[in-house]
Image 1 (cartoon, rainbow, N blue to C red):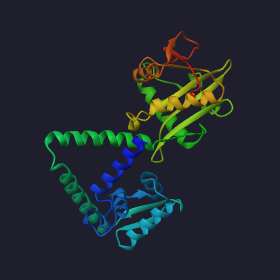
Image 2 (image 1 turned 45 degrees about the horizontal axis):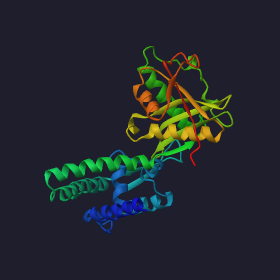
Image 3 (image 1 turned 135 degrees about the horizontal axis):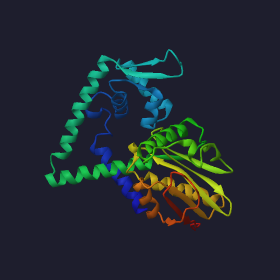
Image 4 (image 1 turned 120 degrees about the vertical axis):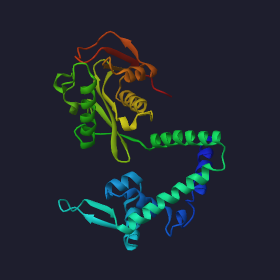
Length: 295
């Protein structure tokens, strides 16, 4: 309860200090919600579905915000000629001008927050803000069981294969791997997880159930854009939980010698290096970990 109360106290302090409680945010004649949508659309425009995912708001609420901005002549929402289901929000010249004003007044607000503090306090505040932002982003990531043939899963796998293809000493050929078809990572033979941040896939990992109560973990990857959020450890922990739920009591995996960050993750998570248990051509290190039900 103490941690929950601290989070609530922090939320109250921040919303008051940044002016989120005012009807006219940053002295503009519109509330924070409308101002934030205006800013997020940006000079290049934004797909409405992407805008909703980025802001994590209800589609009905976003529609009301967009209608209010359209009524004020700041935004136009256009349907794609190729697909009527796709809508793009764009700023009008008046919208662009108000966005520039929002930027200027946001700079003024930031300056007013920093100005009363000493240089040491400013550094502490900015460093703390960076840490809070990372942790809040980490809490925003959604991890879900996904069919490895789904577009989000395929997007992760393509990025993963491209990255290791560049990093491995001899490149990477998917067909040579021991698991050339990720479709087998579906119940009841396996599980595949995809992590998403603001609706965009940023990580994945899968497992296959083996004989004698073990689970073989494979295709662990986190996008460079989401690294530093603890997502690799979270994916690993969730795969272990799925392994336990499926009856496995041992997790096994292998990795390439150039993936030092992965090796460090596995060791920190309690995996111990063991002799090779398969002939994966791209592996140099093999690990396993006994799994225990946490009561």
